[in-house]
Image 1 (cartoon, rainbow over the protein chains, first blue to last red):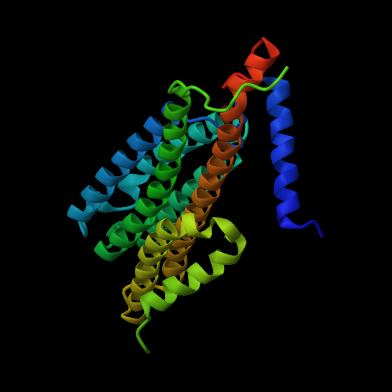
Image 2 (image 1 turned 135 degrees about the vertical axis):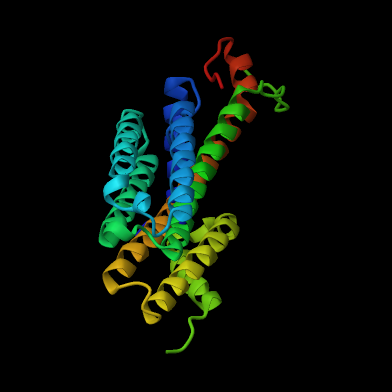
Length: 168
Length: 112
């Protein structure tokens, strides 16, 4: 089996070769996408509002599964749209997987709501579900922020090189 | 039923995540630890609710799945951040010699 140091060295030189051939920066992961970031921010905001309203209406007919199905239809449509957008971006496998996991969590929340029927979600169910969704969003936004920082760093003019000129 | 030790739960998750992350562990540990503690607290709460009869086992399974999705998302973020770090290292190394190479050649071979 190849030693880690040798593997890293080969990977580095492979990356350097690609860079020299293309004459630009190397990218191992997709670029920051502000549309995706905004779409997720809006979805989280509408979800927080939805859960807050459900919590306030716990036990009332307004909190029933029947009266709230449209939220799940809308959030699923939003997530599917964002997933399709992310899939069209090169090297976006990690982001796509994160969005697919978020979609699974929304499906779990929908199924949980459905099991409660007319009673709607209980307070503790809302607290637990909100915690899971917020943790997922936090992870996704942490990565988005890192991608955004990379963008800002790349846009900043590089300082003058301090290395001596190579002899011709 | 005994109470669930949240710290032990989070430590177990951290230990399981440590090996696959290898050298990236030091960078990833603070973010992963915070996320796993949050997730561990919710898992403990789910268990208590089942015991108290506030959740059925089927409902608990759905809530647990949401926690698993959150944990997996945290690890994916760590992986993504490590890729950005590797990318930055390569670009930084090339950036350090770009001016010298371009000057020596008389044209821009490396444009960063």
